[in-house]
Length: 281
Image 1 (cartoon, rainbow, N blue to C red):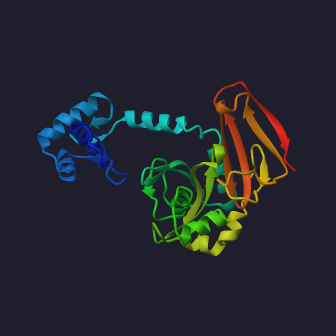
Image 2 (image 1 turned 120 degrees about the vertical axis):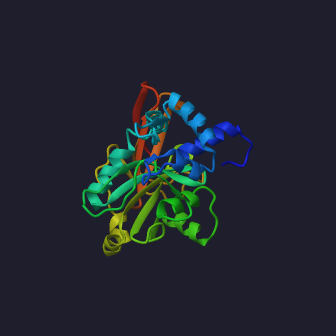
Image 3 (image 1 turned 135 degrees about the horizontal axis):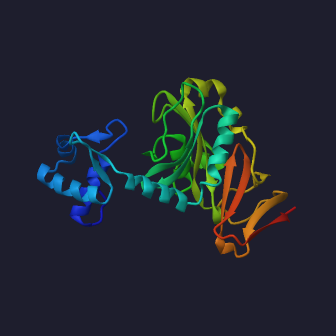
């Protein structure tokens, strides 16, 4: 629970939803009581309210499972970030190049949320799903997010300098990952793109070949700027394609950095937009 004072009944109801996991998609009343430390009478009242609003479903055998309302809210959350039109195609390109899974993570409080995921077609692969909330202190994507949201120390300085992070067996001893930052307007961090897979395969491939994976780019690819994002000046990157709204405030720009090259995708929040080319040489 958060540090600020909230409404106890609401927090208890949300606690019920929080105890469901991939391994336990259905729970009995006794299971819920054990995990939430609540009385069964309290659970029954709260569960009835959650059922009424579609957040919980009571099965015929008396067990409970999550309701479809949560899927609706999750879909709204994903769409409101305006990444669904761009990021999945980039992930599919990476998966096609490296034959490992690719994920897009966004900061979510003290954790990172998997917003988009494309699995490898290989039979042996790591297990990551959209909606997973993972720690920030372990894993390549967590290191990238921390590095560009104020993380201090030599390790984060290295991530900011090299524009990527790699992890081998940190979150899971059998899994490895390589991640790069994703920047939005004014070079603010939006999240991190990560390629992950079985550790033995990732170690055999090596970091450098994975970082060289580019895949088809929908709009444009430009060279990495001489400065790091956030320094407030534009690098000499030659000719670039920039898509803008007639009013810049109505455009949402995401720059995907992978393997030392920028992929700049800009997509509008309104229909009245145009593209133009700028030569910054």
